[in-house]
Length: 327
Ligand code: PBG
Image (tube, rainbow, N blue to C red; front, side, top):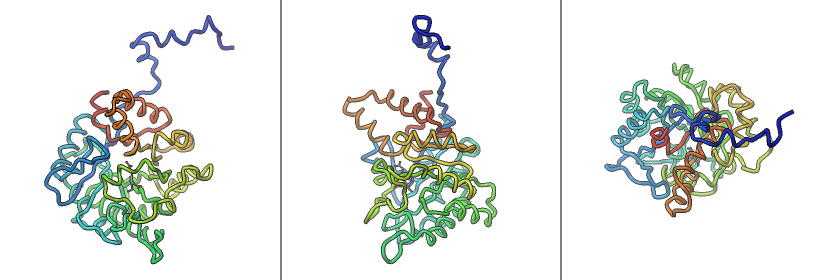
């Protein structure tokens, strides 16, 4: 039988800062944070992103500097997104050895050595002129199986350029298997796959589409990303399929609105689980704080603690460097 009041007084363990620190059950560590970074081809100066104050589209030089700062702060990894100068229907720049992601990877990998893990998002939406995550059928649908070959080629190009983790985010069926086979066939059997397994069709990606210039030119992503109100068990099904296809780690995205999913996934698998605190989550806190409506620093830390507590081993967050400094 648990003691009752007045013998039981939970407040005893909350009275002082030192006591709260001692009994804390959730601790953030810089090494668990991953910083998403954008590099844009053909610009001379970093470009601020209006809907994400403090986040930039980088030049190759400013990317190196920003990655170095993150590494110095102890951030565990970065994930790279590229915006090519020229887009086309098949997203040719995604697997071009001279493409912006591949060039920037070369810089980062030689600069950073073993200081932090350099990951790449593997998708086509930043590279296609129509802004969808794959190859289109004549009717304007995303053709799952034709897209797999493009993802496989992009993943191999990224691995060849030095990417240390391939993170497919396009939500095509079979994408992990296709990428695993292609990586192995090209001699990259040691490069792991972090699968965006449970990725929802979310309004919270809005600002990212400014950052990566990848808003779909028609329609939406509802036919390939998960419905927030979708079938119970769908996230776990996606996770299990990705693990069966060879994923080394899995991701839930977005984070704060999907903490239930994160917990389910954490309890169901024995691989590392990542959560992506996405652009809209960042923008909401920044915007409210800019209006004086919320305590910015506390809101940032509280959101990250919640994501970690719900089960994320790794958290992708645009605040990674700032938070690493604060920890
Ligand atoms: C797809 C991709 C997206 C994000 C990460 N990878 C956009 C989308 O699915 O529409 C969103 C990340 C964010 O909002 O911060 N390449």
